[in-house]
Length: 143
Image (cartoon, rainbow, N blue to C red; front, top):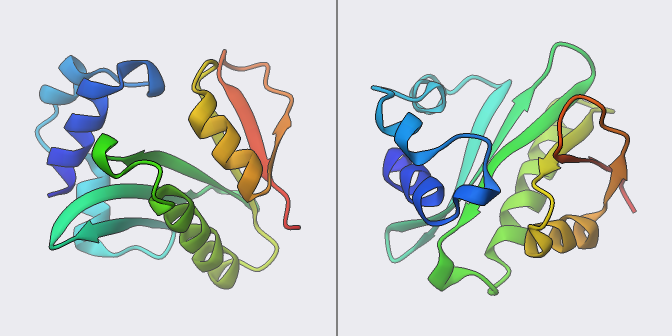
């Protein structure tokens, strides 16, 4: 279920992710699939469902310091604009903050992905300096 939506996200929106569809096809099992099966507290994935179909995903990974990162945020095109992405991110933030008191949550967005950027701003993310990649880094600042 996860694999199918992850591959779809890479195929339909290649400009929005750091990995490519072709690279992903060659991976036998994604690390996140193991995390889903093993339910580690430091790595978790939220899913949004519509009539038992997985229509959105959002992954959280706690880093070794007091930060955590949101990865692989994706909602199927036909379900976008229905606040599903916002709900996923807010649920992930709530769980991360409950599990890890005082954690700073970071994410990256590809320049030009204005829909995602604006959603992240609306939720409470603000740009922070990023010298390591071309992506825009953002940190969640509770309002």
